[in-house]
Image 1 (cartoon, rainbow, N blue to C red):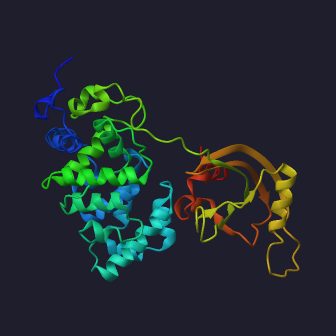
Image 2: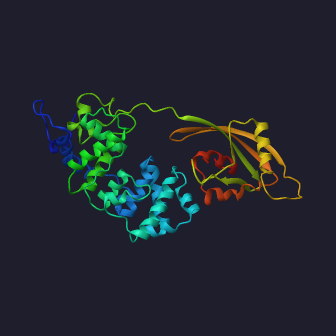
Image 3: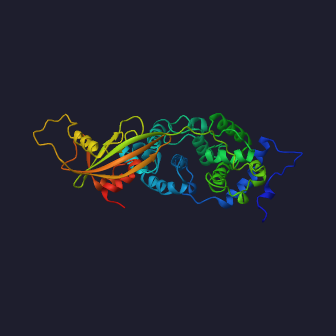
Length: 380
C-alpha cells in the first residue's frame, strides 16, 4: 500500500507518549486543511460563501444529501437572492420552492428569520454564534457554520458527520445521540480548532465525513487524512464507533388517500396550521385503512361537508379505482397509505379544485404524496 501523503503532516505518537484528547483534536488541523484544499468539492454555496448563501445551504442540507440539494439551492437563490426577497415571499411560493426537501417548518423558519433580520438587524445576518442562535430554526450547528464559514469566527459546527469523524478519531464509545455528548464535543473542538482558516477547518470535517468516513458502508480509511490519528482505525473499532443507542420503533399510522378528479380538476385541501406537515396542501385523507366501499362512502360524505344550501342535485362519483399502497417514513412515524382514484362530476366544495398542471407548477405537496400526484396527473 502506498504511503498516505498526509502522514507527514500529522503529529505522531508512541505507546509510551500517547496524545491526550485535546492534543489529538489539535493535531488534526494540519492534515485536514491540506487535504481540504486539494479535495473540496465544487459546490454552489462555496463559490461565494456569503452569510445568506451559507445559511440557506446549511438549512437545506439538514437530513438531505448534497447532490439532492444542489438544484434546489440554485433555484432558490435565483428566485430569492437575498434576505429581503425571502422576507417578502408569499408562503405558497416559498413552499413550492421548498417542495421535495421535506421538513417544511425549516422553510417557514427561514422566512420568519428573514423578517427578523430585516427588521432588527438591517438586513444582515448577525456575525456571532450567540446572536445567530436567537433566530428561528438556527441551532448550534448552523450558527457555527455561518459564523465560521461566512464570518471567519473560530466556532465549531458539529453535526452527525463531524460527530462520526471525531468519535472515531478519539475512539469514543459515548452515545452520539445524546445532547450532552454533542455539547462536550463542541466544547473540546472550540478549544482545539485554529483561529485562522476556521471555515475551511469546519468544512474539511464535513467533507471527510461525507466522502471518506461515510455515514453508510465502510469508510475509506486508506484515503483518510486523519488515519494515523484515528484510534478507532488503530484499534479495529470502526464497526463499533460511533455508538448510537437503539431507537424506539416508529409508530405506524394507517391512512386512506382519496384522489378525486373531475375532468382536468383535482381535489386538494390545506392541512391544519399546527402539527405534522402544517399548512401544507394534501389530497383528502382519512385516518385508517378503508375498503373500496368505505372509501366511496367517505368521498360521498365530502359533498355534504358544506354550509352552502343548493337546489342542484348532489354530484355523482362515477368510478372508484384502487391504486397501489404506499409507505412514507417520517422521523417518528410511518404512514401506510391505501389510495383510490375517484372520477366525479365535480370537486367537493370543501376542497380546493386545481388544474392538474397546477399541482406541478403552483401548489406544494409533501413528498409523502408524490407517488399519488404522479398517478393522478398521468406522470410516469
